[in-house]
Length: 443
Image 1 (cartoon, one colour):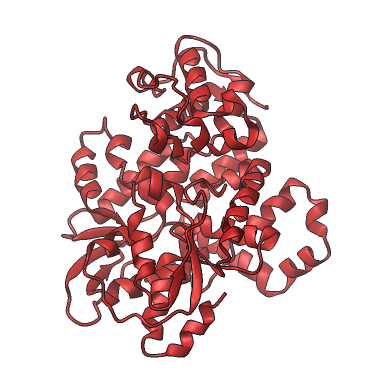
Image 2 (tube, rainbow, N blue to C red):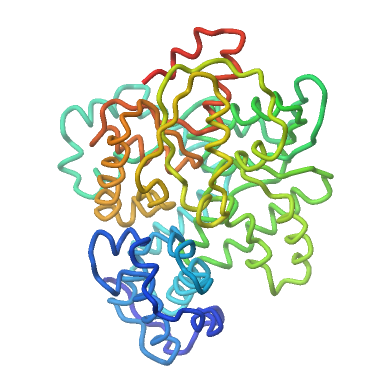
């Protein structure tokens, strides 16, 4: 692997000994680990990776092999659910990646790509809008369909694999709604803030709109605060902790003082990081109290809706659905029941539990880009579970999982439709007065 060691000293942020010591190497985590399930290699299990972290903490060098094993981890945190000792593995692997970033100098091309993506694109509303507009032109003029139809992607190698996973652009982009307040439908019961994300404003604009509508239907004034932006989750997973801290401070400034009953996200992957802002800023006295107050009100949209008296005006959706647990919702935030309960409230929607529903689908932030081969291998196993249910609808609670599962349907499925749970609720609310709308979701 490209890259050179910058220093043999420990970085200012590395896996903490107290966290490493919690692991008793019992091995109960290994069958919850997607990479171990695929490879059967000890060093690609949580226990094996922790063993390697301990060696580095004791002075062993950061080798290409170590970087490869840490990089191959999805950080899905399934091992945390399985662990009887309460090992905070997500914290450990994020710290290991931060240490690697501080001690290993990547090649020039990689530094340029990462610098553009993480420091220029994701934090910038302008850059994302330009990128989204270019993507929309690429799609709308028929060039994307032509490239795929002629088989050009096969000639592009890894770039072709990545293009297949590129999200669509959905103009008008949701950026235009940031700064607005959407009044509750009927009597106001709650005042909530909505964190719209970064790429979601481009590629999941309709999901963001559906989220606002469902919250309105349930008596919420929905505020979309100005000044918000990328939550920093992708930066944390990539080991770019200082960049993530800057983004966290920006969001805390945007959401502080709003007197909200809850702060809502519809992206489970973002939600785990948002709920851990206090850990991210634990040594920043100027923001720690803000982070703790923010954290107490932070809710996934399914978690929030599952905790209130739901508006029962739901029309029928005559279809069979299965649910894929988003890793950072099930394992990171410990939210499993709420999405299933919400689906159960929709008339005529038949639910079938899939085997291994909480094993990662292979999306994992940008994992399906940087570790495409392993991601696709994991996705194939996931689609075997999906197909075994016979469901025509696949529901999940994370935009990244939606994209990954849509790729899974194209490669290994039988024409299933993939939807976020809140999109199904929105469809049901709209079909309450327009029954024909429900036909759109039939599988």
